Length: 259
Image (cartoon, rainbow, N blue to C red):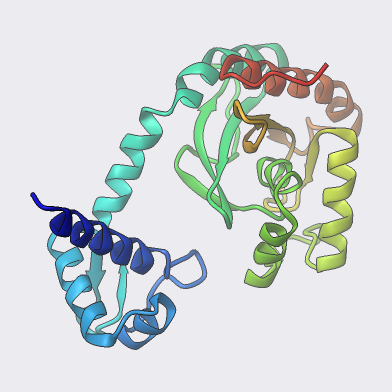
């Protein structure tokens, strides 16, 4: 293989990534013209790349509207990636302990730039929670795991989430940009987030951020339970334990706090 071949392959991969990055949780289906504009590719090039990506299952095309969307193969590969993530293997015993100590379910979430994806859940055998399920995508602005993640992202990431829209789910959902920014500042100060029935009326939770070896917050862990059990007093008593669990997971995957 020549250097020219290498360069051509790299350029093709770059174009493919450019097309994939056109899609988001807000823009799930796009026309050829929209993809060409967003990716900066000439329309014929975009069409050729989309055809190739359809062949390998990275892209699907709606037969009625001719619009394009992300393919099921990406979901399959994503699940494989999640299954091999160190965070899943390392966090599981801590989540199991947290669930047993609290008597409530614990959730592990990772941030995808717009939403939080619940990748693991542990629950005591005697408890049945109506919380989030593994692989479920949930909004970042009104869930405990979501806000614990969002509070420690760059300002432009927060603004990106705000621009996508702060959907109202319950009467307690924070739905204004100023309200969300104020809430995130409070989370950074106290070190944990609270979901006060903001996403589901029957659920409350407390969550804390998890950091990777470079100190970046990329995941979070929560304790979740029915609102009638998760009183203000119980949440206050659980918060230190959730923060301790998040810190233990962070250290387990290589994070070293500054002295």
